[in-house]
Image 1 (tube, rainbow over the protein chains, first blue to last red):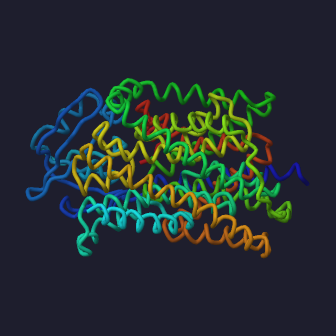
Image 2: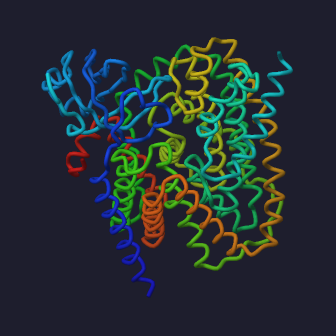
Image 3: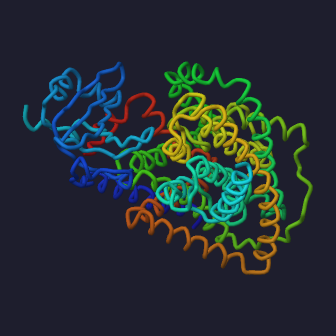
Length: 127
Length: 414
């Protein structure tokens, strides 16, 4: 009886992980206007669209200012995603490019920012 | 002015004592609640910052009580459950709370002079260690797993590490739960609910609790407090690493084996982390905790005068909270011994589940159930529970090595 228990809890754990994995792939980002993203949405997964006001490339990170013509929001691309985007990042984040970005809303030093994690989180809509 | 500061600090102390007794209620949540309302009460930004710092300090001490006596932790006290539970079941419950509180108090006494004497070095310390953090963590994980006694146990330890690591990765990086509520179901399941279910299974009644003398000599207590303070300094400066990871690192590097020493060190790490993460606003110019983010929004950049006021408020609040927590824990034990402990355990499990559902919905309950299963599996396989810290260590290693995106792509998430 005792020896069956590890198998039972292993099965429960494995099934739970599979269900969580399946739901991770189905997370829908909430479409939001740039001006509506604020500190109450920290931790939420959102999608915003706008044009690239500016993009600053450092060794590890890309700092993008995205604007809808009225308000701006910071988008931060960390090293892993920057590497995955490769040289294509320069075209995507060229000044004036219209892009949509999905990512988690974060707050750093009092400034709201969006942090995408996947290449598929960034789409160029128009030049 | 000084009278106002003292009163506001006392107010924050009382609030923090109360909130620390409620598992799942974090100081970051309270700080976010204070920000929009403080001005309506005629409180200055500095006054509001004093309240937040005092809440943060007193919350640490009272949060030891639900973790040690009920098995209901928050993310910073999760690892205390097993050693504290061991002491509780040998009739030394008050000693568990005393050891953690003593560690925290010693860390604050040690940490304040360290802070003011060496603050200029902190920026350099952070910059020089950041590129190597993931290598350090990988080495520590390898040492943890290799510390199991047989080849079979090493394989089981790897299994537990990767299962809990996957769970942590899905929750923290794949975004299935809001970031600010992500850790409650994971750590409550891995360390809290699983421990309570196992104790229910054994039907062990809680023995009569004694006011026992701490089994750690003062010199040893000071040594573990120094270790904990150093670890707390390290994580107080580093983003992405919390007190729990620091405790695991220190335990492995310095071979901390006894439950009593571990609890002293845990208390020290938590207190030192709070002190250094708040003062990181001044030392490295960046906030390192939700509470310090709130203070930065209130005060902008802080100078040495503001730092002195905030640290002073934290010390005052801590002193009162340490004393109050010991009194509360003794009274709480008296109540617990008179009631049916298995009933208390069941009620705590229900309470944890309700809190998880309230903050994270059905997805949170699924995470809680999975985490609980992994925690029980760990015990069934006979390997150390600290391998479950894979839930934080694996995502941290991926973050510092810049491989979060690669991992998401590998698993075809998104």
